[in-house]
Image (cartoon, rainbow over all chains, first blue to last red; front, side):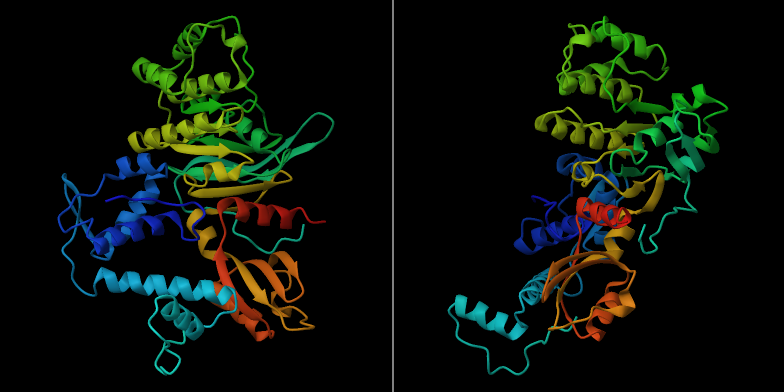
Length: 134
Length: 311
């Protein structure tokens, strides 16, 4: 699994690390029982504060995405609850809607444009599309 | 100053570095510090930022007893600096702002031996490894080293005894981009291996963005903001606003806006506060909030410092 962060990203660094691990799980590059790098090793690799990595791992552990085996390290957990793929999709959608709003584009216009770009026709008749309240 | 109320205290934490109501006045009556309450929690990477002359270097010198305050006290790891300066300094690795050297005729190896004698915990293997990583040549006289070379040598002397506290005054000044990268990597590895509190003074805040977990912003010898990074990330936002024609602003936010950018219908306001509440107040005034974005550490520092230095 490759964990990368960008300083220009609007998400805080710990959130980026959390998302990278989740992304690895969705893409299948991180499988249940796979070991994660130690806090120390990942901090050194990313050049970030070790406390930030520890914070990301705590968050992932609380969400049941990873678990710690005392003295052996941190591992990807076997998934329970909503799939990481669904959670990630929610995040992607949320970010796209925020981005579009900044340019005055409403969610239904965004959805139509996405489908057009993907060559899949129009959604304009769908009444159940989320209104994206914030 | 026209600043809204910003958090300026980190009470309730175990502090590695602390100054209490410190006043420093230089000859000629210039006030360098005017009631500084610096609070650096144990294990923090604390970035101290502010314009030139705001008192960053003076604050660090007070912690080393290199400058005696006219009023107030300073503590390093619980030791009162003015009472036991040698004991306080034993806890500290220091990289001074001005890379001047008093023993310029020594070669780097002898310079390091001279320093090593002051610290029981000096680790020669580590010192040699640091010299190799930072490309510090050991043969030439230190007086002939480049600015960057001298800075790197200072870093070696600060790190090689593994002090619980690092005081870094513009540590990347004079380093080339590659050496800056190496410095960041060295600091992370050092901190991950040995618990260290870092006070990092800089006016290039972006250099510390990946590492900083606490921020202090200094203006006119006082902290206008002192907070955990998480608190800053949670409360400071740049709101993209679409204003209707003739919009009169949001009266309920008067005095709360740190920075107003843009003109006409397209505006960006930087505001400290709960995102929902701030967005709610803007919306209630008739404008549309397009976006509320977190700021980079550099942009956050600039917004507060610019607001604080407005007449």
